[in-house]
Length: 219
Image 1 (cartoon, rainbow, N blue to C red):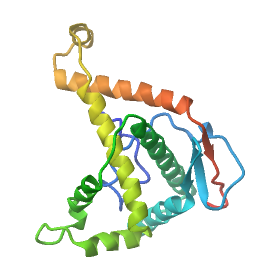
Image 2 (image 1 turned 60 degrees about the vertical axis):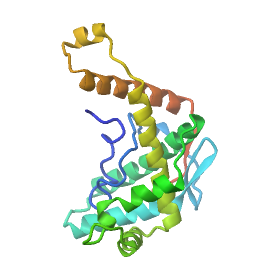
Image 3 (image 1 turned 180 degrees about the horizontal axis):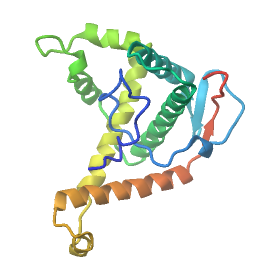
Image 4 (image 1 turned 90 degrees about the horizontal axis):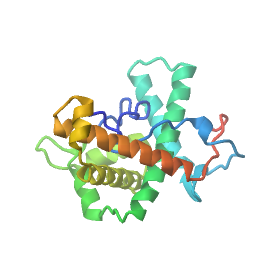
């Protein structure tokens, strides 16, 4: 399945975050869509009145570039700009979806968040048990507090739930199977759910007020 929630997350994941910040999505979300505004020192964007802190962007941006350097990747101007844009877009779309999940009554409990973090392989020790030292080392490398990191992760878990909710309510008709020339119900259902999510998210974007405050001098 072409996973709507993951297919566009490229630059921000790269090395250190690959496989962890799954579950969010973005489609046709160009920076030019945001418009321009005077910069605010502590804020990179405002989504329907909700501020996205600059510290989130700063942590992800610096950690990603640091990992690229360690991997021997040449940091061209093009790659740096791509990374900046992808991180900013990801933060914006995560906030957009988080606001929508709350409208649908989708919540993420503290227990769900803890289970998600404690089950991630990166944080386990040799005995396959959660090791807080690994967790805090990860956050130290990311230059992010547990509170800030867990806030970002909570949003992405909620986005995963929304994906599952849409998929569970999606049904493929006989005429749709015939028109697509396939009888693979699970695959067709996933494709249809993906199309529904794309259309829905396009509507969300159009009906949202998105203001970008980050400028090149502060990136």
